[in-house]
Length: 259
Length: 335
Figure 1 (cartoon, rainbow over the protein chains, first blue to last red):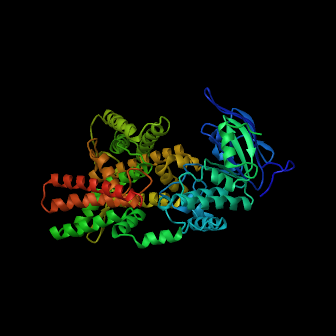
Figure 2: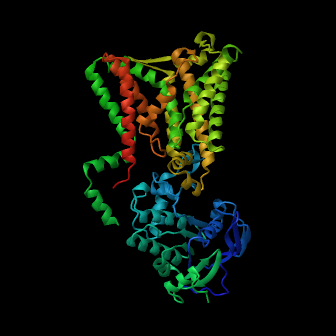
Figure 3: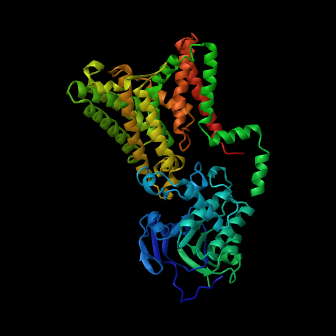
C-alpha cells in the first residue's frame, strides 16, 4: 500500500469539475486525484455526485467547467471512446456485456482483431483463435480462475463471473486507469471477495483503480484512500486507517463535518 | 465456483441437457423438424422423395429463402421488416419497366432495380436510426408507401418476360443434373446465404450485428456505433430484397405487381421457424433457409398427401407458434 506524497504526480486528476443538468447541480466543483499504485474509493449518498463524477472521467458526460488531466496533461473527453484512447477503461454498473456472445468475443467487443494478410485485409476475417488465446492469457494473468472456457456464452455465467469478464476487459485494455462502478452490487459474499481480490491484483500489477461503491465493508477492505462525496462536492479524503466506516458514513450524511 | 459448476453439470436433467444443446445450436431444432417431416411425408406418399419433386420444392422456396436472408439480418438486430415484399416488388417493377419501356440494357436495368432496393432499405434504416421509430411501425408505414409507389409507377400492369432483356429472367434458367432440376435463381439464393453467413460469423461487422440485437446500450458502451450498424443492416437487407426480386422474375417469367403478396409474412415465418429469436441477438442464418425449406416441404407434402390447401396454412401457423414457444424456452436462463 502506498501513501501518496506530494512529489508524486497523479495519473488522473480532476480540478473544479462542474456539471449541471438543467437546474440541478450534479457536480459543484469537484477535485479528484488518483495516484499510481492505489485504489481510490468514492463513496457518497445517492445524489452526492458519484456517478456524475465517474461519467465525466470516463467521457460519458462532458463537464460544464473544470479540467481533467492525465499524467499532468489536460485532456478533453467528448465521448467514451476518447477516454478509452487515453487509457481509461470503465466497467459500468450494468456491465455492458453482450449476453449471447462468448467471453472472448465480449473481451474484444468493439476492438476485434483481424487475421493478417489477404484473409484479414480483404475478406476482413476475424482472428478468432488469436483473440481467444489472448483472452485466456489476460484472464490468467489477472489470476481469474472462475472463467474456464473462453467460448462460454456470458449469459451462462454467474454475477461474479460476469463482473470478472468486465474487469478482465478493462484491465486488458486500460493502460492507465480502471474505473469500476458498483462492482459488488448484487453479488454474494464469495463473489464479492473474488472481485475485491481482482481489484487488489490490478493495483499490485501497477494499474490504479477507482471504485465507486455503497458497500462499506468492501470499500474499507480494498481502498487505499477514500473520497467522500457530499452534495456535489468532495467532503473529505480519508483512509481506512484514519477513519472507521461509521465515521465515513457520518461525513457522507453530513452528521459530522470533515476534519 | 468451479466445483459448483461441475456439480451443476452432473445433476443436469435430460430437459436441461436438451436446453443447453439448443441454446448453443439454434438451427438444430429446425434441422430436426425438416428431417422428421421429410421422413413422414415420404411415408405418406412415395413420390415425395423423388428428385423431381424435391427440385420443385427448392425452386418454390428460392424467393422466400432469398428474402429471409435480409429479414434474418434485421431480426438479429431485434428489428422486423414488414415491407420486404413491397420493397422487392418496387425494385422489381422499376427494374423491369426501365428495361421494357425505357429500353435500358439488362445489366443497367438490374442495377437500377438494385439501386431502388438499396435506397428503400436506406429509407427504412434512416427512419429507424434517426427518428428512432420502432422498426415495426416504420416498415408497416413503408409497406404501404412502397406498395403505392410500385402500383403508381407500374400502373398495376405486369411486364412479360418476353418484353424484357433475357438477363432479367436469367434466374429462371434450369440446370439439370440427372433427375435434379434446379434454377440459377436457386444457386444465387444459396450463394447469398454463403456470403452473408460468412460476413455474420467471420467479420467484426457480424459480431456487431449480434451485439446490437443482444443489448444495444451495452454495444454502445463497448464502442460500437449502433446507428451505423443498424443502417448497414437495413441497406444490405434492401439489396438482398432486390436480388430476391430478380429471382422472382426468373421464377414467374414476368414482373408482376401482384406476385409475392404473402412474401412479408412468409419471410418472417421462415426466419422464426429457422430458430432466429424475434428478440434479436440469437440465431444462425442457415437456419432461415431450413425454415423456408420446412414451409416448402409442408406445403408440398400435405398437397401430395391429398389434403386441402387450407391444411397447409393451418400447419404453417402451428409451426410458427411452436417455433416461438421453443425460442422462449431456449432464451430462459438456466435455473
